[in-house]
Length: 514
Image (cartoon, rainbow, N blue to C red; front, side, top):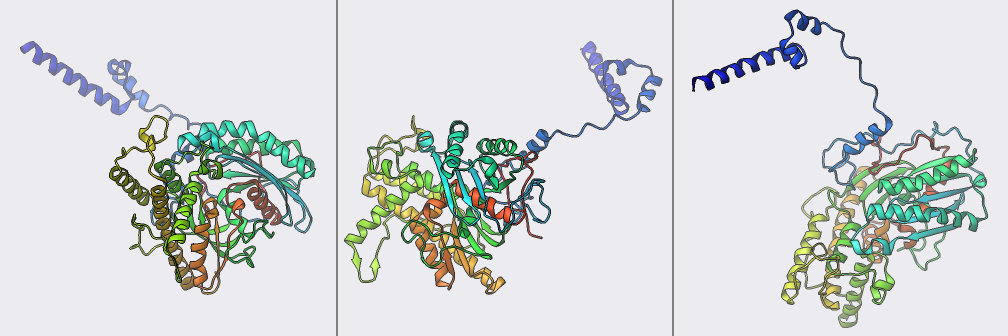
């Protein structure tokens, strides 16, 4: 016992000595038994040289890590989340100091810009003239690549982009009868989006620019591309594409509702590259919510034998078709002199009705629908399975078609009521702050192709006496025209980018206005 106590005491003393030595010099066995004068000399040695500056790859990794865990559709720092703003933001201003040293076409000249878009799951390219004419375009869809997964799989999307990009770009150049040297510029989406997908399009654009010494490059912001589609001055080939056919395109300034698969925002648009976020989603986007609801309803986009499999290209489109089928049925059964009663017996709660700001939230609505769908399945004696607890993501037991249509209509009605509420609040705030400056609303983004959203949200703005502009449905979803047109407008302002210094960004919020 005495030996054990002595050993413990010896260890304790040894630790104290080691701790004392560690305070004056880095700890090691050599320093533990070194003479005292050697320890003193080590403390007076020269300080270590400063570490070398981090590489660009390391800097980009640090930027990405700063945004881990943040809602992907939100610009932190401009909304109610009160989070620090990311270091890298989109700010090509001032246009008077273009980064690119390559000559730009005169603003009044006729020139053509090639646009490349690969931010998500479609490989798209187009050539647009400086007058707004769509000379040629091509899109390679990835509908069947991701259909079994309930969402876009980044690696599969990248592989599909890589295999399609050369053919898509070659096709638009061939149709336009132009070579790369004859272009007035090459524009490419550089963010936000899936980084591995953005790189495919950017690398193709960079190769083209490098092959032509006098062709400038423009790196385009994906959300700005959507917004600028409302300014494209061309008649749409579709019949009655806008709520008001006389309003073919918008002019700055205007208010924009941007609804897509990854974003949901209301923005004040002052001029090219000058935007202010009025409100944004604090969790999920509306497009993502539509896709999840489609999965919960058992929509199989790969089954071409069904009506949905033949007609639609996404879960969001499938939910819209199911809801429209329910409304058509109610119209034939319950038509009266006041219109059509399309209310369903399945009630969902409109999000955030008590909040007086202009933010959106769809996570609660998605969860509310999940619980409703499970309850309905239980009442009908079906297993409460979801796409996440089945082997291949497909439900083994489906609800009856009429029930699925009514559930889809209930979800869509509630989601649109949320949009109506937020847009109405935003218009009220804008009129109070800006007076008559903003009297136009544009509805853009992939989800803006939804006819019911276009109709009902337009009605809210028109009730305030506002002009409403909505691009043709095919120009709402991701396409090459949007990148090309954004490039045209930047070049007309005398702005371009250095392709050799350019990066792509998964998160790329607009810079705050000074």
